Image (cartoon, rainbow, N blue to C red; front, side):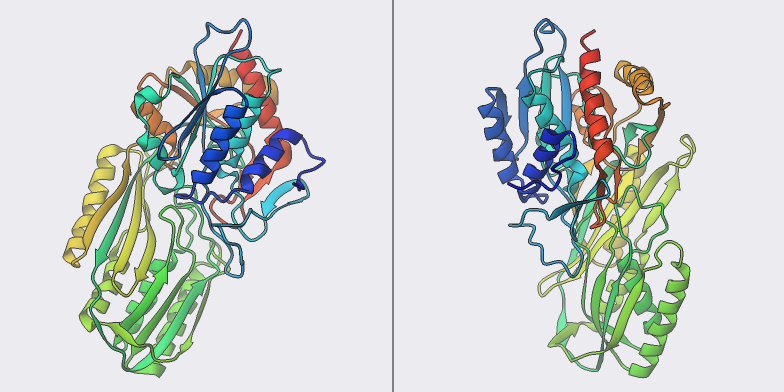
Length: 483
C-alpha cells in the first residue's frame, strides 16, 4: 500500500490511520473495521473481545514492574460521518477514503477525513503494538455507532471493561488550551406521517438550496449558520401567503448530528409569476441575513416538469407549517459556564417519500430535566400536526467532577510538555464519556486529541505535526502514571 503520509512522523501511527481509512466504516457499517481490529489484536497475542454490535476491546499487560497498577482505558470510536461534496463520486460503502497531504495538513478529497475519530484508533494501535513503551495495564475500547447516537457504547455493560480511569481521545480541535470536563446528552426523535397523494396539477417549481456550511450540530450550532430545512419551509410559507403552494417532494438531510446544508424541493403553485417573485424576494432576504455566517448560500429555482403526484393540499400546508414551527438552533445558554450552549435542537432531515413523510430532530442538553422537557415540547408539536413520534438515541450527559485526580495530572503534565495552561470546558456534543460514566460512576475521565477541524464536513482536516505531538504526549502521560 502506498501511503500519502510517507516522510511524515510518527510514521507507523500515520500508517495505521491510513490503513483504517482504507476500510469503509460509515456509521452502521463497522463490521469490517471491527473484524480487522479483532484479527490485528489477536495477531499481537493480546486479549481481544468483540460483541455483536462491533465494539472491540483489546487489553495489553503492564510494562515489567508495573503489573500492580490499576488499568487505564484508552477510548475512541471506529465509525465516521460519511459526508461528501455534491460533485464527488466517492462510494462510502466500497471506496477507501481519498487522502492527500498539503502543507502538513491531512485531508480527504471531497469527503470527510475520518480523523473524527480515526485519530484515537491509530493512537490505540500504536500503544498496543509498541513493546518499548512504559505504561500501566492498558485497556483499549473501540466503540461503534458513536456518530448515530453513541449506539455501540450504549450496548456495553459494566462487566465488559475493568478500568476506572479513562482517556477519551474523541477530542482536540483548534484550541489546545481547552480540556473537556463534561458533555451534553442527546435526544433523537423521528416524526412520521403517511403521505396522502393526489394527481399533480398546476405550475411546478423546483428549488435547490445549497452552499451552506452545515457542520456538527453541537460544535457549530451557535455559529448562526442556516439550516436548509428551515429555510425551505420559510421560503415556501412566504410563497403560500401570496399564492397556493402544494408540495410534491422535499428531500434534505441524512445525518441527525449534522446541520442540514442542502435540500431539494418540487412544488405546485397557482400563480407562477407571483410565486417566482415571492421566492426571489425571500431568497434575497436570506442571503443578506447569512452574508457573514453563510456567504456561500445559494437557492436555485425555476419552472420544472410536472411530476406524477403531489401531496394532499391540507397535508402539504401542515408539513410546511410543522417544519417552520420546529425549534432550531440554540435554545438556552449556560449561566454557569460562560459562552457554553446549554440546550439546542437540530432539524436534521425533512424527507417526503412514496410511503412516508419524515421529519427528524436531535436535541442536546447539559441538563437532564431540560432535555426531557424539550423532547416533550417537540412531541406535543408533532401531535398537533398529526405526526407519530419514534424516540431513537436518548442519553444523558457526563457531569463535571471537581475532584478528578487524572485531570490534575493531565493539567500539570500538559503545562510541562507544551507550556500551555489548560482551562476546563464542557462540550455541547454528546460524548461516550457520559455513557462510561453512567456505567461506572467511579470512572475518572479526561479527554485530549490533536489539532484539527471541519468535523462532519468534506473540509475536515488534521494537522500532522500536532497529531505526532499529541501521540508523543500520550506515551509520556502513560509513563508518568507508572511513577
